[in-house]
Length: 258
Image 1 (cartoon, rainbow, N blue to C red):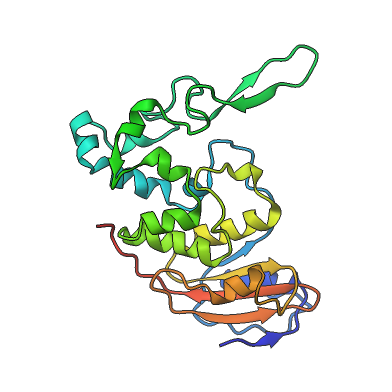
Image 2: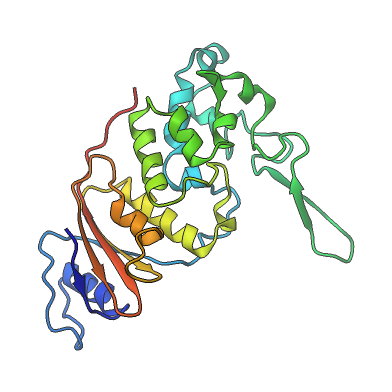
């Protein structure tokens, strides 16, 4: 179900947030009816930090689940590797040369430092031993090098991972690689990734997404209106005059990985 309400691009999130906090509504808002909404999240196009260790998979809560999956493989058990060992931040399988960042910095005299792909792991962030631990012929570094759409096919039998990848696909991010650093994303990509990460972790919430223009079913807005989170029961509404807002009410029931 979809309906159009003319509101400015600031009034909606401010009014909803005031309502959920039990505060007085802004003077320019007469009333808001949003029964059952306990929290409001506004996803904007601001960059996702500057931490190069943050990737699409980690931000979308996919990498942690994959580490658990690979820790249960026969190869990991034989090597004595647990889920923590597959972390490229602190794990034993991270690249010892770049320390899991995937790049090294060259100190160039009289010029700014230059970052280049790590010559040992070639940007994968993992040590060579990690490539020997495979699931269905694919290692975790190999999976992180895949696009969302490619990983969706490779993880078809992993319920929670598949569902979270499906949300990314539905929001138009299927072309991003799982290991892509989030600081390199555009504003629109960062905005949709923020939305995807929230959709995968809550039971009932209202999201307000500031979009480009209403009525573009083929663009990010259309992708969002067609997306359904894992086991989601959804209601959509479009808000806007010069801006477009997509509000989605979702109740999730997560599945466990098999």
